[in-house]
Image 1 (tube, rainbow, N blue to C red):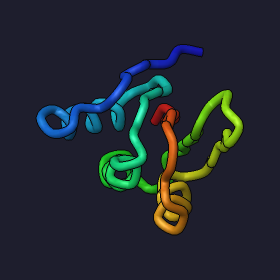
Image 2 (cartoon, rainbow, N blue to C red; image 1 turned 90 degrees about the vertical axis):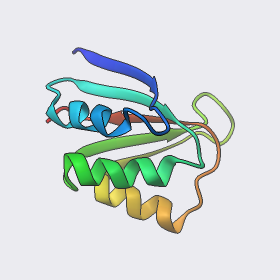
Image 3 (cartoon, rainbow, N blue to C red; image 1 turned 135 degrees about the vertical axis):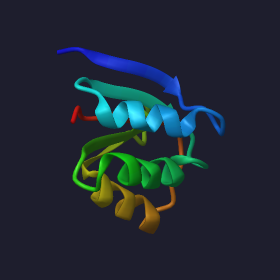
Image 4 (cartoon, rainbow, N blue to C red; image 1 turned 120 degrees about the vertical axis):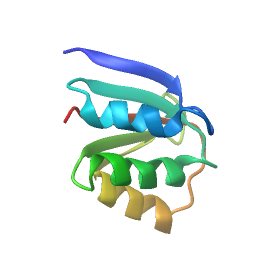
Length: 96
């Protein structure tokens, strides 16, 4: 299937616009995120795409501490609010 690769989201200008585009997208979206901004990104994902949007967040892909958390946006957000994000993250957001 098709997917849209974004890389890193903008820090400020254009960030909301990008989330609105993700919310309306008919394709899966893949992006990178730092541990410092992961919770903010998941909060905005819930805000713009809804708490039921399916998400997969993978940490340290192909390294010793690789981990993947899957679920709804709100479930994944709750996981990282109670477990401090560490490492580099790849976020996969399902289509609408």
